[in-house]
Length: 348
Ligand SMILES: Nc1nc2c(ncn2[C@@H]2O[C@H](COP(=O)(O)OP(=O)(O)O)[C@@H](O)[C@H]2O)c(=O)[nH]1
Ligand SMILES: [Mg+2]
Image (tube, rainbow, N blue to C red; front, side, top):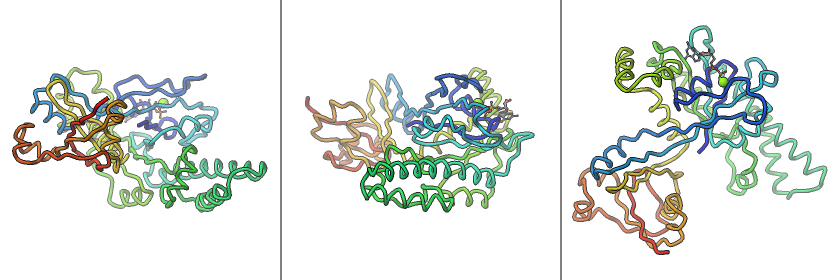
């Protein structure tokens, strides 16, 4: 899962990247081929911590997401614009977006107005792309009637200034557009980058409602403050957080919010060697879960032994779970639920 950070120049995108990953961001004006820097972020997960201690696991492996900082070209990205047109191919390749809106000292932008302007850019980029494609099909007399009709449908919608996120598409239409990477269809988390003193103050109900009307979620983050935490050891971080009246860095909650907004669920494989969290899209099956672990396990799938995290948390060991009749045998089509712990029987 790749999430790209977009927003105006100076909105604090690179600072957010550093706050979330602890990695140096990409230089602001990088020229040439490397225009994106990926970083891995670990998804904090109290359930995984519990499994690690219940099994006495030697290793703990959380889910990781990839986040990317881009290097816009100041000559290409217009003042105040959230996108650099020369970066569009990279941004289209993302699974999700993090939209940064600046509200730190000297940069306070109105949340709703700024978001609407950014949505306008996403919608325009999609409109342009769909129209070019349709033009080409017409000129070359190529494509199916189905594809042309589908393109006309999205062009009409985008022409009204509306994001594709809010348009119902049939499975066949989604398939036809799967390689387009439409920007206004990507899940996105709006990140308001503010000063520490205002990070705890929540967005207003009216703002949240306006953001949700776009099919999006919003989160506040004091990016510069969170970024400085990486310079300290654990004790120093605790102290800095305490001084600021916080128990934990906000980045963990932001990453959690992003994870939920992506529509991901977590399942576990846990034992003494390791407690391992894995992610799946909601609606995926036991066979999909097997494939995430290893292709051989999917190929030789026989059945899955499943226990829900809630049941395990009550009984605290495999033997007790079994005794209580909470271990289920499921086939390959079983729809995985968030928190399922599985052991897959397979033969190769
Ligand atoms: N005070 C303060 N300054 C910030 C914050 N976030 C970013 N900045 C500053 O704003 C400038 C632009 O930040 P940067 O992350 O490079 O923006 P980008 O162009 O969107 O990548 C830098 O000088 C940052 O130090 C913040 O939360 N608070
Ligand atoms: Mg930057």
